[in-house]
Amino acid sequence: MPGRTGPELYRKAKTRIPGGTQLLSKRPELFLPEEWPAYFSRARGAEVWDLDGRKLLDMSYCGIGATILGYADPDVNQAVHAAVDAGSMTTLNCPEEVELADLLCELHPWAEMVRYARGGGEAMAIAVRIARACTGRDKVILCGYHGWTDWYVAANLASTEALDGHLLPGIPPAGVPRSLAGTTLTFHYNQPGELEATLDANSRQVAAIVMEPMRSRPPEPGFLQRVRRLADAAGAVLIFDEITAALRVNSGGIHLTLGVNPDIAVFAKAISNGYPMAAIIGTAPVMQAAQDTFISSTYWTERIGPAAALATLAKHRRVDAGRRLVAIGERIQQGWRTAAASAGLPLTVDGLPPLSHFTPDVPGAQAVRTLFTQKMLDRGFLATNSFYAMYAHQPVQVDLYLEACAEVFRELRQAIEHETVRSELRGPVALSGFARLT
Image 1: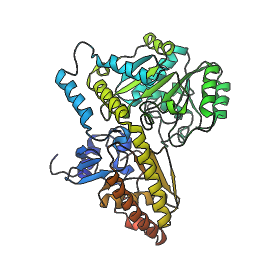
Image 2: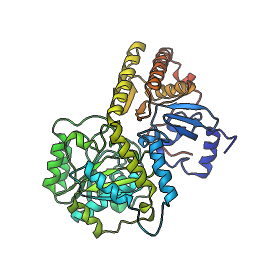
Image 3: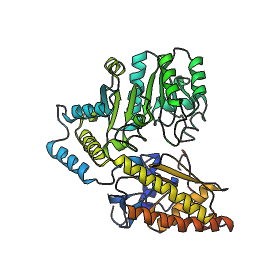
Image 4: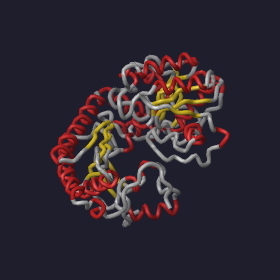
């Protein structure tokens, strides 16, 4: 909409779209309320142009982790253009879905069969449905964040805080049938004793153990191996949610690096570099259960998603993207530490290098983080306390970003010392977690 800035358009959007956006993680209130650009006109590489024509270097969530190669990657776009020109939907199936299934099983030799979806949340719902069909059981034990659907949010029916330690706090179970209470249980990462106790308390009732093999911190020695043994002993399907971690360090799932295979693994986001695509891969005995339940949708058969995934995976392997993503992430993490030490700003840095984040170790940390975003935006960066690496990030761009971080960290330290953090903000402090918008 020409002539309408992002913040202005977002104010209108909240009158037409409940919550303002389709994805919680893109709400401006989570970044810089009243000033975050909110919308883009175009993007290429690691750069984004907002509705006012301002060019911004994206050093934040970078397509919420979907655009692992970079915005408008030419190789992926070429494959997508060819798919569009050839016709993306007909009465018949596209052959690319078979080619992609072969490739995914080649990358993951333990897997034998594949089903598809177009989004991560629905792909996780499919995986859980298959596990329940395979085992004939109802209960699921989870660790981590796995989307918006009923099977996951049902964990908060028993306690509205059950999911608070799993990435996103405050998720309300409104609209989820109360009859699902007790069907989804939780345990914490690197706490196998919690999992074992929950399995013992629900003997032979658990259909699946669902978890991210890694996200913010690595598994402790033997943790994933013990989870695998517990799943086998309980007769439960082990599902790895690879939606966020996959392709960050190698050209498949991060579980390949960690050395533990699941029964099902789920991919979305980075698998197709920003085009809608998701895949559920698994062993034949488990995946065959998909034929015993109804899992079907028209747009899971279109051509663009598989074409984009094939092109993304091919380029990822050809250029060894994982190696570069790790190197970029390690440089960012070290740059944060160096800049914070120089500025005298207490800071905790953690996360898988390509999925890095920092936390100011000071009172009012959320206000400090909001001021960081404001000051970085003034310098031409989309930035928060998290950084998702893309293959398109260039060394000179990383240099510019870290130079800006060093300046801003010094200014943040001064604002903390002079107690001016709130007064320097031009709007409210950013929200954290789920919050209803009025």
